[in-house]
Amino acid sequence: MTTDITLPEVGEGIESGTVVTLLVSLGDRVEVDQPILELETDKAVVEMPATATGVVEILHVEVGQEVKIGQIIVTLNDQAESKPEITDKASEHIEAKDKSKTEPESDLSAAQVPDHHDDSGVKLTISQLSSDPKRLIPAAPSVRRLAREIGVDINLVDGKGILGRISAADVRRFAETGTVSVSTAGPTSTTTAFKLPDFQRWGETERKPMSGIRKATVRSMTTAWATVPMVTQFDKADITEFEAIRKSHQPKAKEVGTKLTPTAMLIKVVASALCRFPDFNASIDIGAEEVVYKSYVNVGVAVDTDNGLLVPIIKNADTKNVIDLSKELGELAERARTRKLSLEEMQGGNFTVSNLGGIGGTGFTPIVNPPDVAILGISRGVYEPVYNIKTNDFSPRLIMPMALTYDHRLIDGASAARFLRWVCEAIEEPFLLALEG
Image 1 (tube, rainbow, N blue to C red):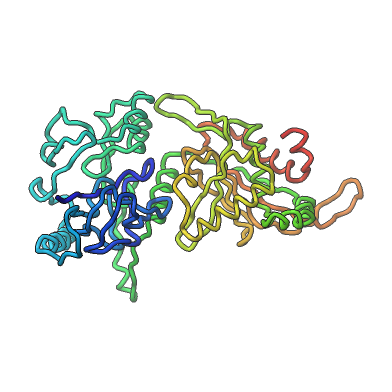
Image 2: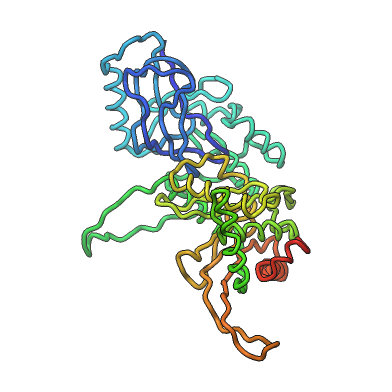
């Protein structure tokens, strides 16, 4: 008896991933929960475990292939005991897969596409899915619950996943627009790609496929830019004393095996600011016309990696001291760079800090990542002559540029100015955290 193992749901809003590593080969025997492949999703690289026991009879995927939720990845034979030779069935599968790569997806007929099993186990063909008005909607229970909670008729939502599968993102998109979303085969459905010129007219070119992380960045940034009215507020903080304090307490951090970083200290300041200004720790529910205020403070930190930008989340940042924040930040950043972050470590953020000071620059305008409503950008501190009214002269002070981009639908300009000024003053006067934080 053979068993097909399909790609399960790996996270909210994730509809597909790219195979990074195959951990099994034809003829290998696998047990339940044994990892069979590594998948790069929008947010991390995760291992996919086997859900049955048996010998690998067919590998339906290969390294570099994009796989959608619900797609068959491995076929197991629970009666085989030794490595089987590649059968005609496997050869036919490989040949069919290669052939399908050369044909447009839109030209597939119902006869060419394998039958689909929805969540209830009912077997449906493509033609049945498209023609039966009373069909069972392919959506996970959590997605159905979300639709009920925000008052969306899930029967009206156009799923963008495999065979019309509806994700939480599809439900939220419908709630915001009130219209059916049109699926596209391109990397983003929020914009129309314009036709590129023939670059080879002017010289040699090379094309490289986008990584899963880069594809996710393209989608999220395009959506954010097209749907969120953003404004950026600029200010400067005098970090002369701030840096002196950080350096003086560095030995204490080393005693516990960590390094006291400016970013960790900034996270502590930001966490206190989010408690003081709750609008910045909220999200907008367009469908319900409500603002969701969160009682927890989870701060995301942008990490530059060889594979692209990742944003791990420090949970309950307001309850942790600076030493703990430094240690946790260091561990998360290392896992981000080695592609070992879990999905849980990249979900649940309320606000993001992006510190480019270690690279350079005098300022930038970061983009809000919905459902967050704000993001703080930090640039490199430089010494500037600052006039001291008490001594009637100028003195060199270390000044750090800061930029706060916010969602203008929820946050007004005056509120943004107050938030950023409070952050600057808390940096300049650390006692302010103890006094007002």
